[in-house]
Length: 364
Image (tube, rainbow, N blue to C red; front, side, top):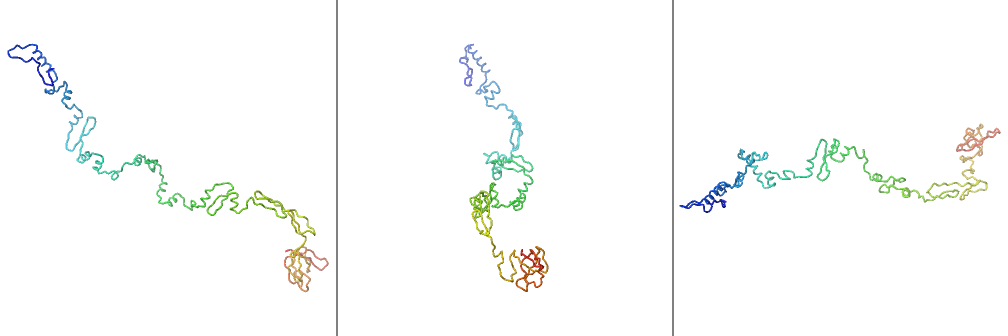
């Protein structure tokens, strides 16, 4: 090599010596070496680049390669308070960069940038919220209301004009009026007794009974006891003169025992299956008095009375005491008729002897 470490040194024995003949071999070697050195890439230490091409020379010298982006930047017309920005690949333009803008882009972090902008999260702007994010994503239309479908998740539903008249009511009473549910007019006011009845099971043969506190449903022996009814185990026993009977678990029949015939010798008596009656009358049925002036006789009493004319059979007539004596009766209108007898009297027959004496019986 003609150079060592970038420094050229001629080959040994090539320098001439005064007053001596130049030798061809060393001389030719020197010429060849100079030729080779002249045609080789000159190193940087010798004022060259050590390269055989422009790109290699730039690389060796650390020079910037050709760049469209740098060419675009180089062509910009700049001025005070400007900054460059890309408009496309390797294409640049300028825009204004104010002192405030520089005070913002020199901030070290987001918190400092928010302070520069005068924006405090939670004070000046809303902190991020998943629920608000869900609401922001809704598609709304006329007459809609939002509602939650899960935590921080919202959807929309129809809200009619009528629903709005209900939602704007100030209290429950106004809402009931809007719904046509006036208590005591449109709907039954709450009553604990009615609530108890409504909660009862509708079971066959059950009775609704008050227990002193509320209403309860009872059946069978419990219901009978509440109503004071006899138990089905209660027995009905036929008394003297009757047959039949039994407990109340089924219908029972009582029969009257067949009595024997009444004779002059029968008495009032009763057996387990029959009865008899005495033949006779009581004082209330037959008049037993002795007063000649008696005017009130029992029903069925008969007597004879004189009349001014015959009385038709079964016709009624007023009967009076005959004043001149203490033994005769006369009909109304007869001369000397005295006090009238009580009740209604009917003619049961007349004497045909011309004396116009009639037989009367008190019937009422």
